[in-house]
Image (cartoon, rainbow over all chains, first blue to last red; front, top):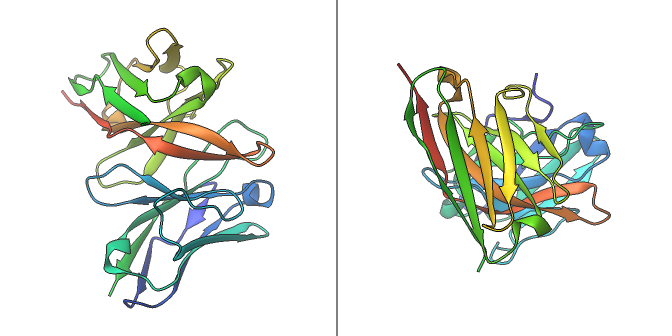
Length: 108
Length: 122
């Protein structure tokens, strides 16, 4: 079983808000980081730490965490946000750095 | 400008070996940690290994004993030696630069290479 669990697919209407979640025991100890991947491209970091965006990531992307669940929220989703999203966190008590299974976001 | 460029992928037969390179520019590999991640066709991201600043290395269970990560600081390059390759090792292999958030217990990977494809097939 995966150490980090994500919903396989989520959809959102253009301009609406969507939350993508990631569950795992390690998230009680560590912040998740989030990666966006579009077809044929390498992953791109979109959120890290408590709620930090790398340079160039739009402010419609935000992150939060509560208990064993980390969330990536896109406020006012755009067509270009359609992609696969992966969470990552260090596994508790180990040096493993597993990814969640990924969530395919469709913007309708 | 930070860049990571992977090379060394190709078509190999089951049981054979391959060495991937991850050449870095814009930073020194010894000042960060570097991870390898793979993605099988149509599948999600799978963390493979990490090499820390001090040289410590760790691996996913699926590759332990077969893959070895190393670093050549003089060439600013990280390597992934893949031995006893299996059909299910077929994937695009990415290297990425890692950093820490806050007190250092939370990780993130801020720069990624473009990936190199390994196909294991008879």
